[in-house]
Length: 231
Image (cartoon, rainbow, N blue to C red; front, side, top):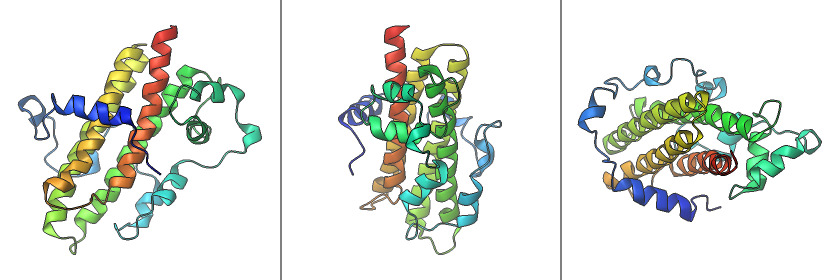
């Protein structure tokens, strides 16, 4: 299933012209020197216990299992009808409903749905980084792959930082800024994939998870875009 939409490609190309893949002077002081989970949001949940216990390798990593860990199935009869209308503005309404159903709080509104995207995306990025970090620490991981993972994890940190800004903007009712920060996060996910190609690898082993992160973030972009039109 091809998850990266034309809009994602446009976003990536647009931001690649203004964002350097290497660290800028202003960001250098912010990027952590140690590759550990301490550089993520202090108030965000720890990596999912299931992810922590799995000790994944890229050969055993399964995106379906990763998604199932974070999105428990909700019976169709229990899904609020408003969620279908909210997700209708996204590029994949059916998947949007399925994923958000287990995370959106009552009352089910565009705002609570957007908040669910922001909070859940923060956890997803942290767990994606945990997967990459676990493999990075494996002594059998080739050096070229380790270097790629380091650059990829830096991009996850940047994405987490952008999501933190999106959360703050949401609290301030600045939906336009929320949208902008989610767009930046999408760009970070694209750069996380590019890290592997920059080191001469033919395929990014994190491709499936990055594509999923992009699509999930785009749900928030679409919902926030619709909110700015109507409020």
